[in-house]
Picture 1 (cartoon, helix red, strand yellow):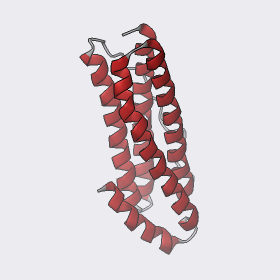
Picture 2: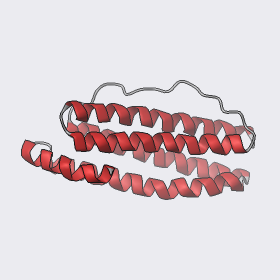
Picture 3: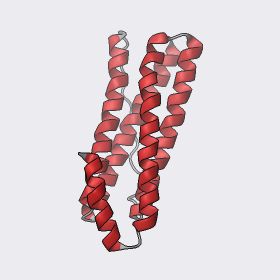
Length: 162
């Protein structure tokens, strides 16, 4: 693999690991609020992000490239509200989509067909991730100020984590 592609994939690994860390912090936020359905969903998302990082790690290892792990950032501060937490998730997914698209463009430019094929999965995955995060923000916008409806929404959302 070309050096610039290795660096870009390594950056993506860190990004996915950072997302996992942020999603785990959001899960804790919701668990502390006794909104266990949202907590379960964010815990699942944290696991998904770790799995995404693992896919990139495996790709490098399979191609004989040593993986350099760097520091990951954590969440800047706890979520200010349930709505703010969900907006954080949507922003993360939109950022991830942009990074995946840039990585795909670079793989295509460099003629790295194996990386392009891997990234096809991620391009499709990001459509689903953004849709789910947008749906969560939309529903949370409606219900975050009404505790009884928020708790009903929490129970409904739990099913998405199963």
